[in-house]
Image (cartoon, rainbow, N blue to C red; front, side):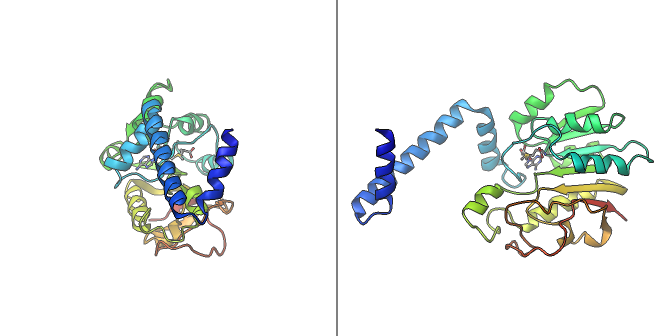
Length: 257
Ligand SMILES: C[S@@+](CC[C@H](N)C(=O)[O-])C[C@H]1O[C@@H](n2cnc3c(N)ncnc32)[C@H](O)[C@@H]1O
């Protein structure tokens, strides 16, 4: 019955009958409204995401909080190897979501102090319920809080410096200016650069923009060949428009000066 109704809707959504099309449009809007309202009532993560979108839109980058343990083993291992002959790095996990990234980093860097910064209050609450010892601190992500814990030797920005890439791709949006402009990316990278020690590593992985396109490019060089070439969604350039990729999209950068 429901399947038949859905088929009927799909057939008439783009049909000839204007009145039917209008009616279905209203129906779709009501269903969407109810769906969002229900999620807002029942789901804390959704509430936090909507709160940030409405009241913290200047600061929020990626909105969704999907994460998992040891999500990028080759990148974490490469960063660990870089510091093998150096003192344990002070680490910032920028956009640590519900803490799995920090738990993972504790394993890769057993002697490091690690700061997890997160903007989503629900995720932060979950982070703070973890017992990871004194060397780990979870903070609300504001420039002031992050600066107060710095400087850092190693900064991870994993799947943070982007905005709903799957949807952007599905909707074939080729200009990010209104949704997530390049300037926002550059500003955050500059801010983090100011907190990173010389010879430290800045890791930008799973991002819609590239560090070499920013004004900071002359001060960094890629570490090894570690890259995000397998990033599936569209990638954008300094004009916030979709760009053609030539060469590697490096992920790990050494700060030269
Ligand atoms: C897709 S998750 C990535 C989590 C984790 N880094 C990973 O790769 O598994 C993106 C996270 O970035 C957070 N985020 C977005 N803007 C942020 C900001 N300005 N400061 C800190 N976290 C932010 C989101 O709340 C979300 O938890």
